[in-house]
Length: 31
Image 1: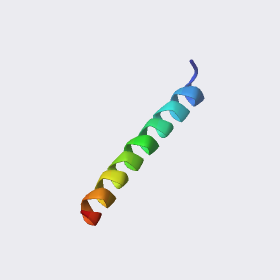
Image 2: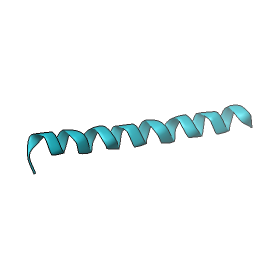
Image 3: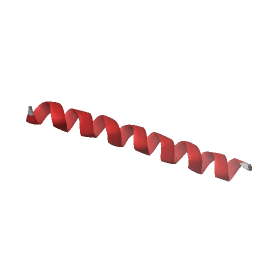
């Protein structure tokens, strides 16, 4: 695995983490 592949993997993981946090926040706000 080279550097660019690792960077893409980290970026996609961070994106998914942010997405889950936003989903949780929106669920709490709607409750």
